[in-house]
Length: 284
Image 1 (cartoon, rainbow, N blue to C red):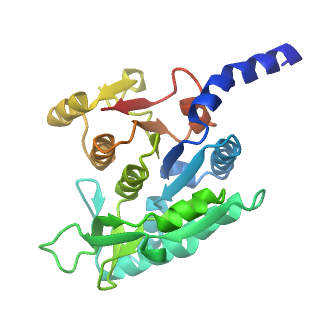
Image 2: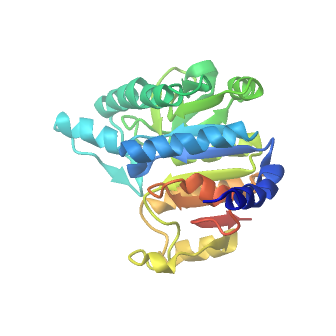
């Protein structure tokens, strides 16, 4: 690339930097991109770049593949209901150890190799998330949902230039721990922050009319179209909670939601800082 081409790239980026400077973006980090070391480093580079150009970034992460690995090490079969993990008492203890004690701290450590901006949190810290049971008729199921978000700690960190990195574990008002779907946590935090964007990193290109054909990717969708695809069962399984959290966020002041393939290098920059993006952009 010659000097002129470098200048052209910077010139193309400038309108996006001007548009999103000072805005807040919530990124749900998950999928296979959490396991691939090279992809993980690229995603962290992208997030740091977004922070350096003046975008306030909040990271929410799950850790499904790692949780499943450790469950199998203990001969426990993972269970799901409509894309949501079913969590008994033993599974809950393991989920908290893996998400908060390992995945979160590993991520924060990777960020802070080249910066001092990442701060690791769970929903329990400063009562960031108050949880309640997702299955109220199943007292021994510790799968939770977000009851309330307390933004104080997030706003404090963002105001000082830090990047909050949040594990999707929280407790209820009695101190009982719950495992909450990370997409739902990201959506709830994006709502409360009135975020410019909610971005879900997945293993899929986005929403496709034929799940087996990436060429059927639907680039732009509104809430009415999303509901129609759900009714047709085009959107099914693990995509349901992702789409539901996006719809909820769009109904509550989030400008746009994006479902993108985190396995593509620099997926975040391509989605945010180019005219056409790479995934599905959802709007109200």
